[in-house]
Image (cartoon, rainbow, N blue to C red; front, side, top):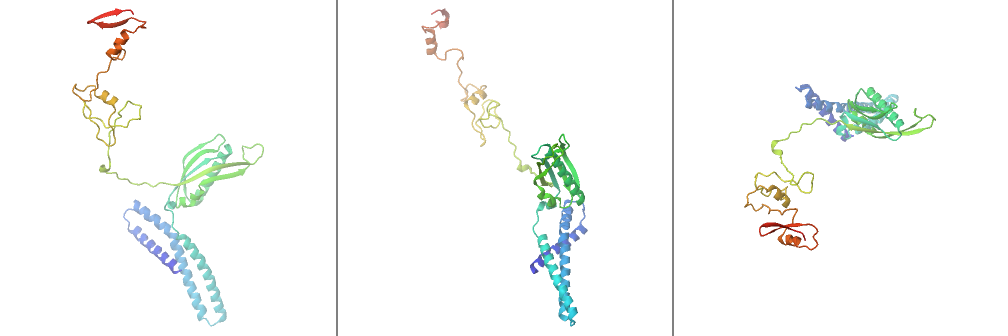
Amino acid sequence: MSALVAKLEVVVRRHDEIQALLADHPEPGSADYTRLTREYAEMNPIVEQMRGFQKLVSDLDDAVALAEAEDDAEMRAMAEDEARELRAEIETKEQEMKVLLLPRDEADSRNAILEIRPGTGGDEAGLFAGDLLGMYRRFAEMQGWKFETIEMSENDVGGLKEVSVRISGTNVFAALKFESGVHRVQRVPVTESGGRIHTSAATVAVLPEAEEVDIEIRAEDIRIDTMRASVPAGSTSTPPTQPYASPTCPPASSSPRARSPSTATVKKQCGCCAPGCTRRPATRPTPNGPRTARARSAAATAPNASAPTTFRRDGSLTTASI
């Protein structure tokens, strides 16, 4: 019991410290003020339990002292009975305080986003989802929470296809986080004309509302890379390279993220280079004619040629049928 009392005394001291900070805080609407207010509200049940526990311990000490000092047997018996009842109450109160001192989820004090979607069951599942929405709305009203609809779509029979709501208040997520999962119902629905029992399901998701955070991005943490594809658009086989600074002969890229351009790319990019450029590609042969002198001669003297062939002889043009 002494270890428990020591822990509770730490909580009580922190509670008194927060109370003093809230009284002297210059900005009631700031984020720091909101955090202190929330922490103070979370400690209130523990402090109340601690004060009740201390009163029970004090009453027990008085009853024990009275039973030991009383000479009258009847009064001593009454004091002993009172001490016995107080010990039972102290044990119960001790278990309750142990539960209160358990580590809490940081998101327990946040607002909640509730999402409901129908599952197996067709139109009856949509009706069941609507019943779940009404149940949670009524529960929020009983707790004094604010119930706001974010998005909702209905089906043809008055049920729900999907709904998302925001529930704000004190410890909303702590009270609703175990509602997440699949909910099932077996009943005779209004869509059933034969009176048969129908099984339908709906899914419920409860998420803690995200808090706003401030993110600072420094200029030295930002790197801007300008990239250009090294192949025609639509191809993803070649990695991108940095844009070239020279308009005549592009140098090999020095970026570790880029590779040297392929031969076809160099030919295309060096078409405007000077004649002395080492990367200037050789002149391509005529695409429609023979590519070498031997090929042209063989084509001119072929015995099975079926069409007239024009060739150059002594600097003049001659046409012969073979």
